[in-house]
Image 1 (cartoon, rainbow, N blue to C red):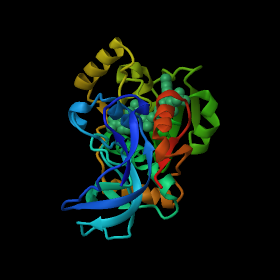
Image 2: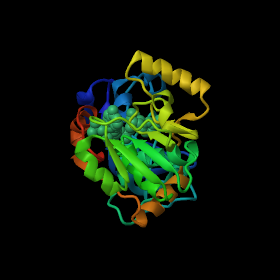
Image 3: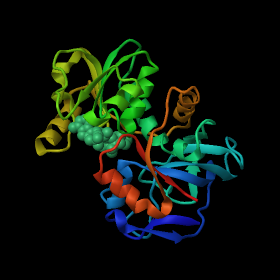
Image 4: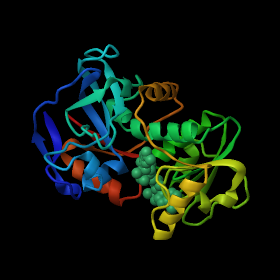
Length: 313
Ligand SMILES: NC(=O)c1ccc[n+]([C@@H]2O[C@H](COP(=O)([O-])OP(=O)(O)OC[C@H]3O[C@@H](n4cnc5c(N)ncnc54)[C@H](OP(=O)(O)O)[C@@H]3O)[C@@H](O)[C@H]2O)c1
């Protein structure tokens, strides 16, 4: 099969497009002819080698999380040959930057019928993060007033759309040039992070930081008494931010870190939202697998709204 292979960890141009042996499946797994994937920030971190203790020290690696394609063989009663499926592998397991990807059947779902393979491959990891961040960790409830930081990124744009299905009021924080897009997602109020601060009266029931810029003590004056603060990363941009993030996580039970788990059940829920038009993908640019290095460079270096997708033909 054709794959984007890392012979070593390194910068974005480390990928080599090669023919490698087809992978084999075990019990409870499916083999998917993968038609599309996307680039998530975590995939760029795995590529750099920062997680090498978990993603593997030696040999060739095929990374990549999101997948969408057709089942070509199955050792699970849940799927049969020909089923069109979508989902994501944990980033440290990877395998999605390839024509064939091995997937645990309980971590896949039938693809939304109203999306192309490429559109459907742009959502699984970010939309599952958004769903689990808001509902499992943030305990989102109808009627709340919430703030989503980084609301036009991959996780943030899914989070705004999912949050609106719960009948909440959403303030989105983003780069001002994407304010119209943030409103089109459903944000009731928009804050430009280049010009404005998050309001410091205690008005929010939940702050979901999808940008990975904050810790709970950065927004303590904006939170109601019992409010939750959920982050995908924490404030890791400075030594002080890292120290506050660590102490907040240990000592403040109102702060939660999203520990993302692939889940076929969550993908089914997301499929319902997608098929009813309540959750829409937004692809900024699509690259062929042969240009995966450009796709990684764009995610690492550029400001854009939505996702970078990759087609595997
Ligand atoms: N814990 C987990 O399991 C988990 C799961 C998924 C993702 N993550 C992490 O969550 C983060 C977001 O992921 P993603 O896929 O959504 O990335 P993304 O698409 O790059 O989105 C990040 C967004 O944050 C915005 N941003 C940058 N600086 C900001 C600031 N100071 N204030 C507010 N917004 C700001 C960016 O806007 P501009 O580019 O326009 O400035 C961009 O829209 C990444 O760090 C990722 O690694 C963690």
